[in-house]
Image (cartoon, rainbow, N blue to C red; front, side, top):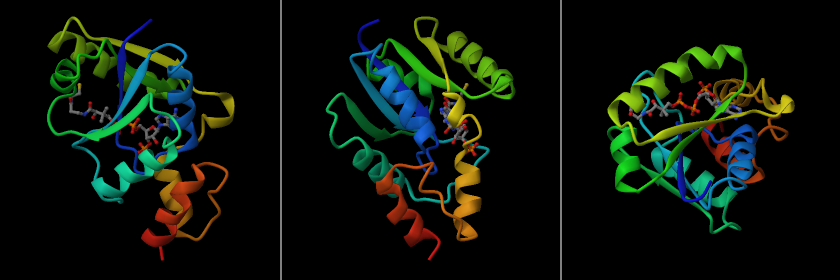
Length: 159
Ligand code: COA
C-alpha cells in the first residue's frame, strides 16, 4: 500500500509498543503522521507539547514520520491530510471491541477512509501508557518499555 497513514492516539506517553507499530507501518505506507488526538474519556498526564516532543525526538532520525496534535474528528483530520488509512495496533482480544466500534464509526463518517490493524508483538501486548505512568509514579523502572528520550520527560513529570 502506498500513501500517507494517520496513526492516532493519546500517546500519554508514547511507548515501545507504539514505536513498533509505527516502524512496521512504514513497511506498508510511505509516510506516517502520528496524530495526538483528544480522547474525551481520558485526562492527559503529559502536556500536548511534551507528548509531541517525546514522539518527535523518538523519530528524529526518520523523515517518513511526522507528528501533529489535532482537535476535532479523526475523519476530518485524515481528509485534510489526504490520508489513505488510519493505522491502529491491536494488543489483545480485549482491544478488539473498542477498535471495531471506532473503525465502524469512522467508516460511517468517511466511507473512503480505511482502518488498517496491526497486531502487537507478543513482547508488547501488556504495555499500556496507563501502566507506564503508574509504575513511573511509584519510582519503578520503565526503561524497557519506552523510547530512551521519554525517560527524561517521565523523570520531570514524576520528580
Ligand atoms: N503497544 C502497546 N500499547 C499500545 C499499543 C501498542 N501497539 N497501541 C495502543 N496501546 C495502548 C496505549 O498506550 C493506550 O493505553 P492507555 O489506555 O493506558 O492510555 C491504549 O492502548 C489505547 O490508546 P491509544 O492507542 O493512545 O488510543 P486512544 O484509545 O487513547 O485514542 C483516539 C483513541 C484518540 C484514536 C480516538 O479517541 C479518536 O479518534 N479521537 C479523535 C476524535 C474522534 O474522531 N472521535 C470519534 C472516534 S470514532
